[in-house]
Amino acid sequence: MLTKSSSLMRLVGELKKLPGVGERTALRLAFHLLKSPRNLTALSESLCEVRDRVRPCSTCFAITENDPCAICSGNRDSSIICVVENSQDLMALERSNAYQGVYHVLEGAISPLSGIGPSDLRITELVKRIEAGQVNEVVIATNFTVEGEATALYLTRILKPTGVRISRLAHGIPLGSDIEFVDAATVQWALQGRNEL
Image 1 (cartoon, rainbow, N blue to C red):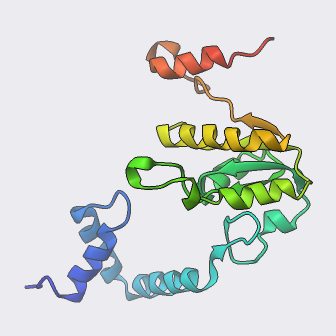
Image 2 (image 1 turned 90 degrees about the vertical axis):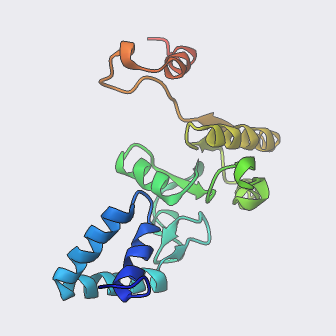
C-alpha cells in the first residue's frame, strides 16, 4: 500500500496543482505515466527544458526561448501594439493570422480582490514603449471579464494623454450563434458596438 509520502502520491499531488486537474484525473495521469517509463522520462526532460530555456521577452514580455522574441525581432508593424493579459491570449490572436503588429503582455489583469493592482502589471513598460515615439495605435485586447474590463478602462485613462489612438477588440454575438441563446450582456455589447453596412 502506498503512503502519503510515497513518490507516486507526491506526483499525484503535483499534478493536482495543474488547473482543472482533480484527484481522480491526477491519479489517472500518474498511472498512465508509469505504464511507460519513456513517457515519464520525456515529460521530465521537457519540463526541465522549459524551466531552463523559456523566459519573458525583454520587449513585449511574451514567453520565448529567444530574446527578443520572433514577433519583436521579425518584420511586424511596430507602430501598432496589441495589449493582452498573458501569452496564451497572444497565441490565440496569432492563430487568427489577422494581426500583423506587435504585442505587449501585461502578465495579468487588475483584480483588487486578488490583490493585483496596476503596479503588479507591465503597464510602466507599455507607457515607456509608447513614449519612445514609434507607436500610433494601441489595441486593448484584455479579456471581457470584470478584471479585463477594469484593466482596459485603466489603460485607456493613462494612455489617452500620450496622444496615440486607442482601440478595443470588438465583442458581441459569436459567429454561428442563435441570438435567442446568447446572454443579455453579450447582446447589449453587440448592439452598442454595431457597425454601419
